[in-house]
Length: 165
Image (cartoon, rainbow, N blue to C red; front, top):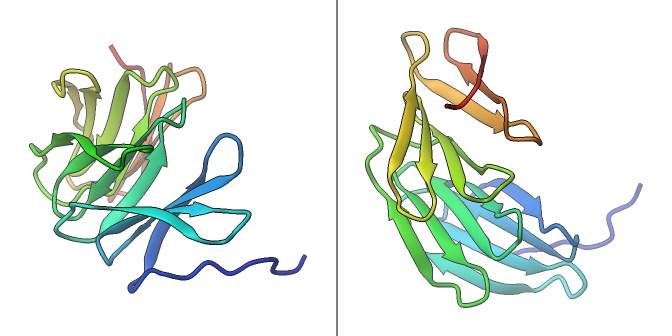
């Protein structure tokens, strides 16, 4: 393999990135508090989303690529409209830094991790459920492709599987 393009524009460490479903756009999240939207063909940053007051850990596309969800060490989750760049929702009831957030495959629910695993209703912003693991913090979270199982990791070196209610 060989490098085909180099995308530059962040001023701090890039924490995560993800391709859109058509593979033409990449979203990046960085300690510089910026979420970048990058065109793969041109290598240019098409837009950037600003609003987090601390490093952005994760930025991920919704299943339909119309929205981006981001989480930060500022203890907030934000949902952004990809086209307008506007923040459309902010979740700010976490207990500390949020290390990960994902859309469920249906796009209607989010799962996040801080000290616990939390499920959120995307439309209302309401917290649906809190899944408490062992003493210590949750460090990661993912959702099966069918949305029926959540996998989470914790500081006690365990992975726990959950069935959402």
